[in-house]
Length: 287
Length: 266
Ligand SMILES: Nc1ncnc2c1ncn2[C@@H]1O[C@H](COP(=O)(O)OP(=O)(O)OP(=O)(O)O)[C@@H](O)[C@H]1O
Ligand SMILES: [Mg+2]
Image 1 (cartoon, rainbow over the protein chains, first blue to last red):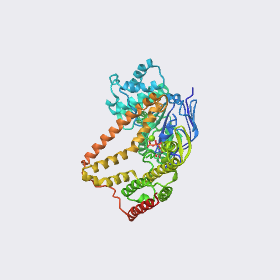
Image 2: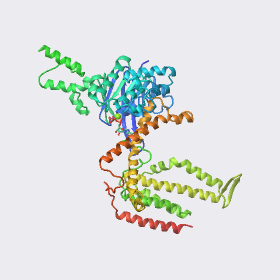
Image 3: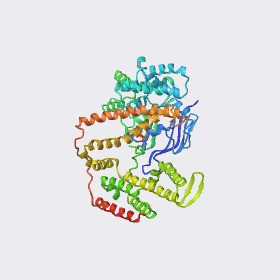
Image 4: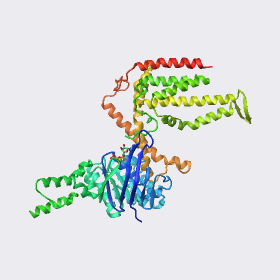
């Protein structure tokens, strides 16, 4: 089953027909291939969150259609019968720890699978499996989620979503407000899900280092318009584009530029820090 | 910031003389006119009141659509009350009678008045909320409550409570939406299935909302104390709303309108 995501002429306006009407998505066309790691970037307020909420029909377009696998979402999509779609598309919101509510971590993780009708005797296995993936110790499972630290809560919230075994995983700024260690852990986890379990990743992020390092493709939003969809090196190699779209330069690109200025030319642009280090070492060996 | 919160979001920042009025005067007059509506008891006095409210709507430069939006949520209560009036009142000429149902001229007249009374009161309060920023409302209320200080009523604390509550309405509305979206993504169907299932589906919404409200309260109280807030001290305010000639004029106008209503009354 091909689970690609396809937007056709999607328009969305907040607060239609009021004085506050605001066009958040202006005729969006895009395709996200199944199994790919796609990042969505853009200035704050450019419509990234609005865009991704259309993929599991939390918002429905005013006009245009969205296809997710064999699902079609348009302005007339009924609010019922969305369970299958939402089971396929997992969504991790910004500050997802807000969604925790159950008595114990275990119950919180089991909540999604139960809603989606997983058999009850499979639940303990699922809980154990996903808590291992996100790195939650076994003895935390019987604690209240509100007793955990912020970073641990974030992991539980991600486990909540992974527990429903999504084929497409959307993450809206999943590392916001975490310490560097926690950030790295989450990004590695996401990358791992993509590479080893073939889950399509759609990542909304302001962290250009992560975007540059992990994504197969980048989508740039600006004022409700999709202004660019391309490979990360195409975007990050071009300082003018970055300026034009108000995007920060990843550290790896900065180092590249600085080396260039000092006459130390590398052949390719390396967006991954390990690649960059290796390239520098190799170049030094040549000299 | 998204502004579509349902209760107070109706405020429309515009430039009309009603918008510019002193909030305390506006709130006082709004209550005054609502009470005045209850004194109208004849076709003429109701018409005068309607005319006056229409002029006010016009002066406030607010779109008529907003008034329908104010009425719509209450429409069933209004229709129900009217139906009871028409079907079950006695007195006046009998038009139709079957069993306990009793349609009389008196009942119909009362129903019409009742309907107008509802519309007038809703329109008046809508004019207030459309033209007055929530912060202005809370400051207006605290000014109006000031005399209660003599009775040891904690006016300052009370008005601060109101402004904090108003301040957090949009925040909590936003959070409600986010949490609902998150739980929907986890397979919750809000408002479907049997009664028990429906009520149960709100638990994953209410608990996070309470947790977050307590967190906000905690953070806010720490922030306030660290900035020297002491309970029931008299505070100065960031905004001081002036008293203009138009405010004085509007008070005289209120007296004038009351006179008209009392003359047209039966
Ligand atoms: N509920 C709402 N009502 C009205 N306008 C909204 C609402 N939610 C978002 N908007 C507006 O729509 C636009 C796009 O919002 P969106 O949340 O998609 O931006 P974003 O790219 O995710 O920004 P950020 O990086 O800050 O999360 C913004 O201008 C925002 O003000
Ligand atoms: Mg966002």
